[in-house]
Length: 264
Image (cartoon, rainbow, N blue to C red; front, side, top):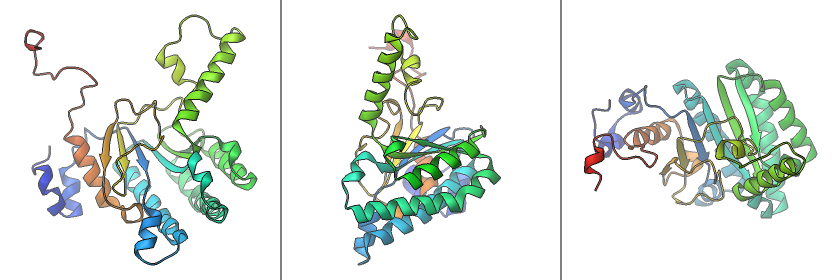
């Protein structure tokens, strides 16, 4: 177990932070809202695309860190439905960067036996992007030990509405009968088959969820950092995990130390 207080973590080296981790208490699923690319570029007098390119460097570094730590599932918020409201030139560049990333990481997914698992309204992506996304997902779909889920044209509210509509269709055609329970409803979500995230990380100092995994994060631990996404690296991953490990995850239950006789 960690020997230092959380307040002293910032003073430790990266290697020392690693030694503080409780390897038996790592999250199974980490979700990440990657925010701050534009501000990172603006602070340096660079075009926004420079921030997005540096953000891809952070993606690789962070995914590598989670893989080496043995965390089996990582979900990243790459492109929201609201992002379609950005200037077309920026959207086109983001799609180009996504395709570059998939071309460059395709072999890495194979070598690591990592499943690429896209979620969201993929039919809204440009045709070339759709084709590549589906191709990499198909190539890696048989891997089970490690999953990289990428949210593309994703919105939590629309996911729930879409799941509800598909459930209604199955009820009307007789595939589903009786009362619907949570586990059954979850099979209609785009994340079907994945456990809920244990930890959600958001960068850039914003403390909101931004329509991400609204159903899935009901009991997820939230971690907000002021670090802009392009600056987020392995050290920041370790700090987030150490913060997670000091949480008391009760899922609405009373602490173990509290007996039924002492609830009030």
